[in-house]
Image (cartoon, rainbow, N blue to C red):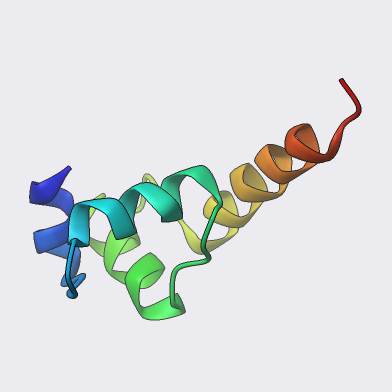
Amino acid sequence: MAGIAMMLGIEGKNPSRTWQRYETGASEPPLSIVAKLELISDGAVSTSSWMHVRQAFQSRQKAPQ
């Protein structure tokens, strides 16, 4: 995970943990990070696909157990 955090320019005390929070939906990445992800993934991950996956994850988290 450290590699992707570095490639995306995520900074701070623990960039890998920040990336993990973005992946799980615990935090929302800045649009600039999603744009960089789209660029380095050659379009495989887009802003709209990121948001779709994030919304699905959040819906599952809110569903009653």
